[in-house]
Length: 401
Image: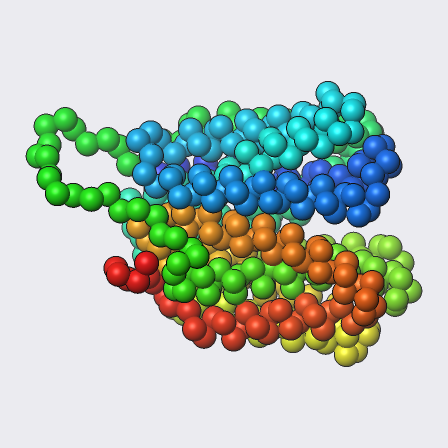
C-alpha cells in the first residue's frame, strides 16, 4: 500500500509541505507567549484573549472559504498559495512592527486569512487521492497528518536553537523562511482535475451541488460537536498538565518536556499503524474507541495523582491523539465525499473551536476547582464525545443535507 501512495499525483510534494508546515508552526508555538508577555508586556489573560481573537477570525475565514472552495473555477492550489502568503505576513509582523496594538491587529488579520492553508492542502491532496484510487484515502491522509506531527518533533528544538543564538529575531525569521519554502513549493502542485476539452456536450438542467449547512443538518452537527468536545478535553489537558506536574506534583520543569516528547514520539508510528487499521475498521468505530481511551486517561490523572502513572498513560494518550488527528480529517471527507474542501474545513474549525473553548475552560477549571480536579472536566468532555459518536453516520446520503 505504501508504494501505491507514491504513485498519487503530488503526494511526495504534499508530504514534504506538510512536514515543513508542521515545523513552521512548531518553531514559534512554545515561545510566542514568552515574546508577547515579556517583550510587549501583555498579561496572561490578555494573551489568552489575543489567541482567542485569532482563533475566532480563523474560524470565520475557514467557514467562508470552505463553503465556496469546492466550486472554484480555478485551481485550488492558488487558495493554498494565497493563504501561505498571509501566514508569512502574520509572522513578519513580529519582525517589523514595534507597536503592540498594531502588531496584535496585524497578526490577527493575517493569521486569520492564512488559516485555510492547512484544510485546503488536505482537500487538494484528497482530490489527487480520489483521482488515483479513493480506497486508499484513509491511509494516505493518515500518513500526511503524521508528517505534520513529525514536523512538531523537530520544530521546538529548532526554535530553541534559534532563540538561544539569535534571540526572537532569529526565531521569527526562521518561521518566515519555513512558510516561504512551503509557499514556493506549492506552485509545483499539479492540477488534479484538469479542465475538460472544449468539444464537450453541454448538459442542460444540471444543478451544481451546494455545500451543506452545518447548522441545519444534525448529520453534520453531531459529529462536529463531538470533535469539538474531543479537542476541548485535549486543550484543557495541554493547558493544565505543566501546572499540575510542576506545581501540584512538585516535579522539575524537565518532567513536562519528557511527557511531551514521549507522547510525540509514540504518536507518529501509532498514526501510521492506525492508517493500516482504518482500512479494515471504520473511522467511526476507531473514534469511539479513542473517545473512551482518552477519557479514561484524563480521569486517571485526577484519581492517581502520580507522575509515574502519567508516564505510563502517554501510550493511551498518544493512541487517542493518533486517531483524533490522523483519522479525523478522513472521517469528515468520507462523510462528505462530494465536498473535500468543506469537509476539511469542518475538521479544521472543530479544532479551532475546541482550542478556543479548551483554553478558556481550562483556565476557569484551574481557578475554580483546582488544577488537580480540572482533568475530571477534560475526561467528561471526551466521554460525552464518546457517546455522541454512536449517533453519527459514516456517510451523508442524498437528501440528508
